[in-house]
Amino acid sequence: MTVAELQVLGGSGLKIDIEGASKVGTARQIDRQFTVPVDFSVPVGLVLGVPFSFTVTQTVLVKTAFSAKDGNVKAAGEYAINGAVGFGYRDGSWGLHKIQGPFIRSSLIDSIRGPSVGANGIILAFKTQFSIGFGAAGFSVGLNVALTVSTGVARGSALDQFFPAAPGTRDIGCRGASLTIDMSYNVGYTIPAIVEKVINFFLRVFRAKPIQRTGGIPNPPKTEKLFGATQYDPPSCAS
Image 1 (cartoon, rainbow, N blue to C red):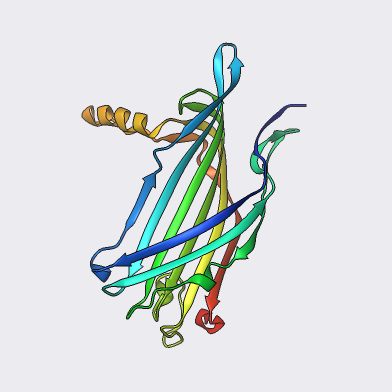
Image 2: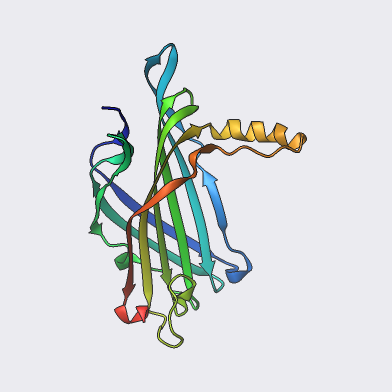
């Protein structure tokens, strides 16, 4: 029997805190992706003299939707997750190890605050990628599995920026929250963010195509939705 699997075991959870404000309203919005510069790699052993390591990388995506000056919105929630995160090859086929949950400890929608004359909203996504393979110090070639948690909160009278609705069915008291968990996986490589920047600096000089920080087969990685839910308060806001 041939087996090649990557599993991250142990109980875990999600704690979400979102807070944002804008003094200029629609004049300026954020739509950016940030690479968390704190990657770490843990050596597991040596295979024919080549380091075998476990690597973690993280990325954050932020989008805002403020429709009025001095708009603000904030929310917090906590959820429990059980089970293993991972995927692998066993008995001739590939498969996922799916999480159980999330189970609500404190609801995101119950905490939404931020009165404003207009509708305001924030989308936040956090991606954590686990890799195991050959390499060290942030370099890795092997199995990759990533967990992406995306959440959106909105409050106001025109929430169709996030949750489309029929005209005239909402008021300033409407609140909406969404939570999505996706898992993606492939066999590929990962390099540190600083190395990607240095290499691409020289590639631009020679007008060559820039490299990506991660890549592999399939590319892009195969993605499966593990969880997705949207809440409205009051429920009539969903109509």
